[in-house]
Length: 225
Figure 1: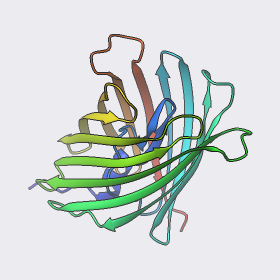
Figure 2 (figure 1 turned 90 degrees about the vertical axis):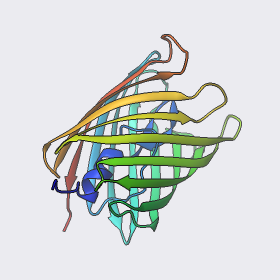
Figure 3 (figure 1 turned 180 degrees about the vertical axis):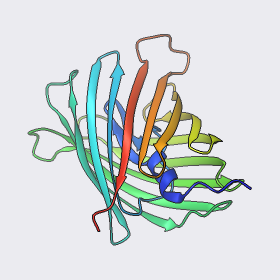
Figure 4 (figure 1 turned 90 degrees about the horizontal axis):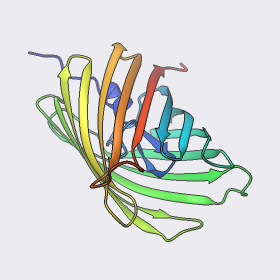
């Protein structure tokens, strides 16, 4: 019988992070998962879209049962860099072949705008099957925008383990009026429970070019204790 994927490995695959032109969500998924990190981790990735590229760094640690993250991006396509503050906690702990639920609040702001920016509230539900070989993630949330209309967000993603240290996913994510975004991705842990590498491709449904999105990154897991 194959050994189940450790919970902190799943967390690393799907940690809540940010994408510059889309709402915040899991790395590399936009749809978040219903877990929090056990200790600490550092996520770093490069992303490329039609307007340019960005380089992200986002460390996060578990502090008293709350996952706290702070980081940001250096963006070629914008005049100012982007900063992110986030807090996430579990409402129901995810276990193999069961459900998990989390809630997260996140604030993103541009450099020099006196902490004004967009605020995201998101609820995530994850369902596990076959000892975590299959994971279904469903998100529902609300975004309060500083310079645009407020809106609701919705995401659904299906993740499949294809080998002991490898998985793939497909998702749909809606963060504004119009057609939703789809994304496909691949993840591998060359150093199990320590280092994850990932790549992904995304685009709007029925859109040819113009809104394509590529990303490649890593997650490094560590402890401060």
